[in-house]
Amino acid sequence: MSKQVVVVGGGVIGLLTAFNLAAKVGQVVVCDQGEVGRESSWAGGGIVSPLYPWRYSPAVTALAHWSQDFYPQLGERLFASTGLDPEVHTTGLYWLDLDDEAEALAWAERERRPLSAVDISAAYDAVPVLGPGFKHAIFMAGVANVRNPRLVKSLKAALLALPNVTLREHCQVSGFVHEHGRVTGVQTADGVLTADEVVLSAGAWSGDLLRTLGLELPVEPVKGQMILFKCAEDFLPSMVLAKGRYAIPRRDGHILVGSTLEHAGYDKTPTEDALASLKASAIELLPELKDATVVGHWAGLRPGSPEGIPYIGPVPGHDGLWLNCGHYRNGLVLAPASCQLFTDLLTGAEPIIDPAPYAPVGRLG
Image (cartoon, rainbow, N blue to C red; front, top):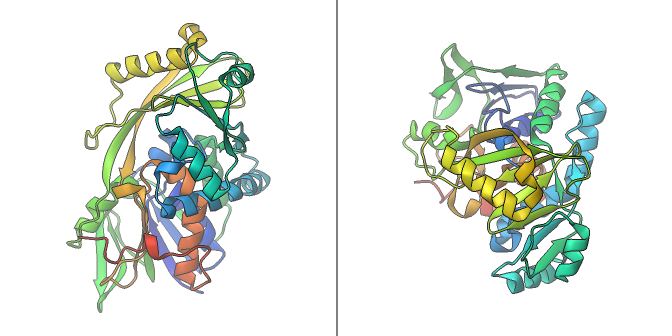
């Protein structure tokens, strides 16, 4: 296909969409209002699983399972081609004192996922730094985390090496261009960018852009704050989650603890209240963090959507315009599957999974 495609938004969804399309179409241009990969893709934790996978619909589960299986080879491919390792780090994940443990175990049996109840003493043996007082644990082996700032750097480097891809940073898109009943480009501060197809992957800002067409996309910014500690490399051997908060070990000993869920519009200011709350959760989970240094505290904006089901496919009534957005808390988890499914749809290939649950048709106001 000799098409020119413009991708609006350079987070992990936009970058991986461009990466997949580059081998299938003529030219790809990625526009981002800031630096690529610096919004929620950079700010998130990078657990390659929904936090509570059994609480999601089959639509989210289907994307998550495909992505989880694909992530190791994506990491290896990007590392080999760019020299930048996204660090897909398989540690497994412990959930502690869940209210819906029975539902989790039933889901695991139904979906054939390696999640099982473990004796709490076994959890303490596996994670000696765990705080006291926990009574129940379930564990899923094989769950990885990806070092998301490195993932987006690696994707950016891979795209810069491709002759038919252009990255346009600090290039804000303000609207869409129509000709003869179809979308033929985007309006930017630098003028019009023409395209055969336009892909909206602008995260929390996607709803604002679609509103310029009189369409209501129920995607809104949901603020999340995180803190980062520096510990010894072997301090935390596995991810742990309790009371809605999680700790994620990186290979070099950094420990991420998150996160908050706040409806605060586009305000990304880190707050002292959130810092205190996250520190308290961190120390309850892992008491030795009381003496560890907080080396980072930041906030990002998730693209909140109903039930966390993304919008993937063509926009009805606007030929030439496509969506790949609205992944809420699971953009990093679902990116490989979402972007492969999207590429299949745009190029007319056999889709990797049933695309119907993600289709924008009938889901826009």
